[in-house]
Image (tube, rainbow, N blue to C red; front, side):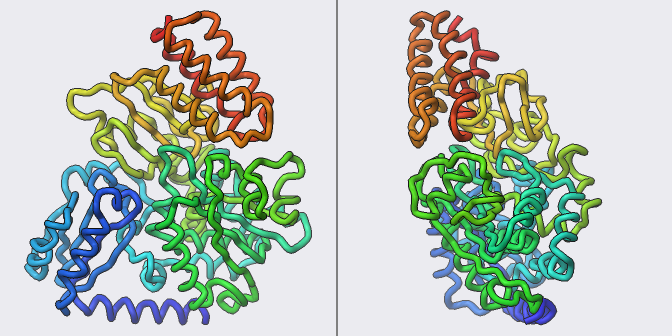
Length: 523
């Protein structure tokens, strides 16, 4: 099939669905499952079973976790109604109201959450049926892939380089540089999608896979074409069951539409895409550990060099890209490098997905221009702390970063260091704790997580991370404060400088930022 044939078929099927009548969308993601979204979807399916004037769509979540489960009713007459925090017991009343023809705006909470955002990667998330490739094609999906296949791989690389797109997994290395590097080595080449996302407080990649799996697949195919990769492996966290289910279903649809496999869109490009499940553990997000587990080896990092672009999966040239990075590619090629660069910072264009959790009124997943401040995310989007509470500690970037006090909320979200103490944006997790939280205890929990997740391969990380926890315990108890502070600084430097992979190299972040900002707690 050509892309034009796929697009025409999609439009016909979409028109037939719309003619059925009212569209009722229940948003179900791993986050909303925890508050009963599956039960809401089941109840709605039962309520609509005997009706021919409406149809049910189960989508992913749009990022407004505080409002889940959500139901959106789009009347055939054009009116739309929004329902938040829906329980299964609310479904009969919602179903009875279908056909009334009146609309209901999103709540003030939802409007406050979405208005400051700039949706690119998350556009259509929570609205499309992830199990329907026609819906994705109908809103422009796979058009960027078709366009890429009409150009040479080098032309695609040049476009992405010109856009200034940087990786979104935490290191912010330009993905097109990896593609170019891999092309210097002989075929076969592979592309691996890093969807491990094992960091506490991080859920952005799962939202993409649950709500827009075809956008990930399209981005992966574009990257595979640019790299010259004949096989692509999507490596999904062992506990991300809904993500794996929806990506697998999307892959089957893509194959049936000549979007994956042999002679994709009659272009002569061949690429098979396979799903792999993670081996469990935070360290599996480290790219060489990920490669080891795909090969059936122990979950531990490899010595580098050689780097994966030279010798990666099965010792072949391999590019490893993050989910959010790849989900940007359709937008980059659709808009063109110039328009993509109009959003964000000159040195780091585009948007960033941030996972906001903890002591805020509106926790969830947001998409903001690079360069936005922590204050804008926490207060404008998140609504600030609950009534009667004050912010005490903000943990940015998870256990691989550090802690910030409220006085530092005007720091910009950008690649590299947010503060000289070692705090980095990382993959985009922002956890807010109120003033009742002890900064020492927060740092201790992050340090304990690093110690527990260490693979044990290298001595500095295996032995040093537990020693950091012990020193924090002594510090919290008030024993030998001066000596413990010096020991903590020493341990953080040694573990960070001598460890083999990023887990140990960044393990000193919580310690250094604790000593920088919260020394008053143990002075």
